Amino acid sequence: QVQLVESGGGLVQPGESLRLSCAFSGSFFSRYTIFWYRQAPGNEGSQRELVAIINSVGSTYYADSVKGRFTISRTNAKNAAYLQMNSLKPEDTAVYYCNSKLARDEYWGQGTQVTVSS
Image (cartoon, rainbow, N blue to C red; front, side, top):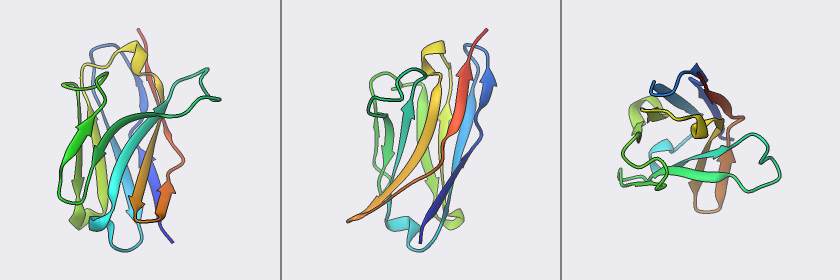
């Protein structure tokens, strides 16, 4: 059974940076595609917003809203994925979730809160 645990969230001022981590426990991490999603406050009833993707060969995708500011990466030897977030804006405030998919298997972490406020 795969478990994902996010960490690294917190309260920062606009323009500052945070690095989120996603620790993967289980087998075959290197084969999974890793996603970062977020859900903004007040949007709990809405679909989570896709932020970034990294697949098993390292190809990446970013939402337009974060392109050029966020970087997704992974370290297969550590069974971990990361989301480096620079130049944070108040609109980046959300709970950030890590997700992993391989064929029909899909797993979610519990989320980590990111708050950007002056």
